[in-house]
Image 1 (cartoon, rainbow, N blue to C red):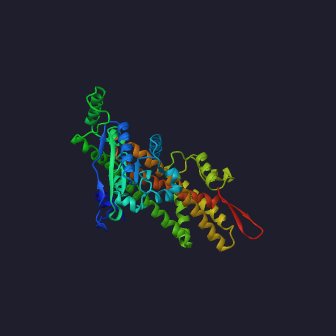
Image 2 (cartoon, helix red, strand yellow):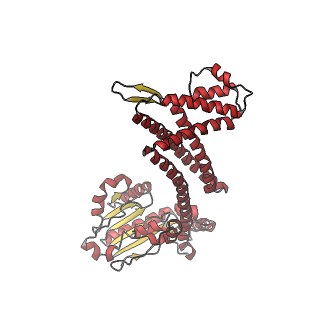
Image 3 (tube, rainbow, N blue to C red):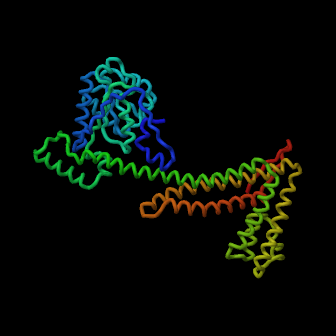
Length: 430
């Protein structure tokens, strides 16, 4: 539940398939939402907003001032101090005192300066005097990236049918305008600045052109559309990741259940998969390469002459496959026979499979995060980031499966056991 979901009703339905239901307010709203006060420069905008703060204090009303960032709230606080206006500052640096600051923000004449994220979810309780003088006066010093955030700020005033007022002071130099408004707005700003320099226009005069009144909404809409697309992409990326995660967790759950038949299935598949991949995807099957495979994955001190007795460079792939598979079966069987207790043997199988899965999955997550960052960058070059991410993620998933089988294969053959005096076994993995 939120008071501003109606602003993004279309996105809730299209992206998250959630319907927005608007519930009427408990008490009719009395808040007055004033039209934006638009100025040419930031300096004149700030000066005008400071004057509005003075008027609120003179009317003995509480005033809440909003800024778009912590740095801007710090700067605005200095401006208030230069104008000898006492106030409380609420931002990320003063969050520990939020309750104390909010508790006094509803007093007549109190001035509270906050970032757009501060104080939400907390009502500002007005004193009787503050209510009788017109309620809370909310002053926005700039439009936010999203209109919903603006509405959240307005919603600080007029709670539960109380009186209140909200107004935004904006300028043609605001970040939202500079980065997202059409080119004619920049031309208009230069024209107005020229008029001011020529004395044909007052430097503090607000702008009343009808076209400019709609510029803020259009700039926010443009920025909002980009943010909506970003959230859609994030959801799509997460869906792809979720599919892989579900498969990994399904395999882990089977391992955790200590199903002996599943252990044997994984071990048998690991033997076939690793040896098949090595034999049929390698371009070099010399005695040197095959012996390296045996030394690195099966037995580091296996006699080289024994290998040369069974195969040579003229041996076919099928002959090499049969030899390596038979050797792997023999060595791994010998490795498993080190365990005399069936409980310890089952635990050994469980640990090596889990370890192989977890290490490969950690590597996969790291890769997918880097991949996501990379393909998002490609989006600027007219690529389709989601398609590239899905294709690369799928290809890497199969590589991850290879890593899992190789991890199981090597741990079965190369793990070292150290027997302790109490009968427990300490494992050292390759």
